[in-house]
Length: 238
Image 1: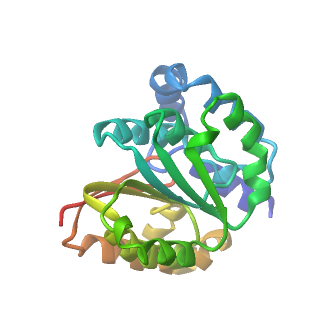
Image 2: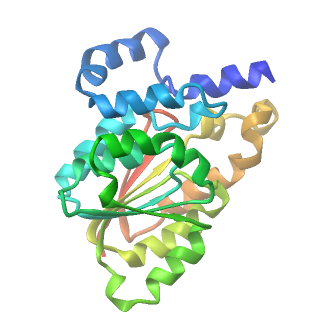
């Protein structure tokens, strides 16, 4: 169990970098520019037994740039945890921007909510404690929602990533962006199955299949980026 924790913790240090190089990137380019509310939320999350689930700060820095480049105003987040990526989005989008945030576990969200409130951006968030697929399906029943979202972030159950993708391709506008987290899944996607650490085995195959489907999806332009545990950035092109 302790070995599994060490393996999981190493994910957030950047899979394709030495620890020294990753520390250099953080100390030189990431940490000095991380907003104070995000630093506070990361500190609050550090004591959580699943703290490794929080979005890597270097990945968050890229996401902030994407939000600004796309001029995002209306977004969806599938999987919230304590709200680091949610707060990042809320801090970046305009004052009248809106985020539909979906998670099964409100308790984790409540850990970060005081930080979000102190940052003055909680009014931008519509948190829905529910399974994501029914919520997305309900959104699609309103024709006005189709093609109306600028951005989505997904960090949830890997087995449903493709199901989320199919729905998001209808909800996102052409030119809209969706970011999927954990698409390198602890590096297990490049490991022989028999050498895969137990902690990663359950979702390894789902991640492999999802990555292959995305690579063949003509509806999107994509970039598979080795930040954190791997993020895949998809822009809808039709």
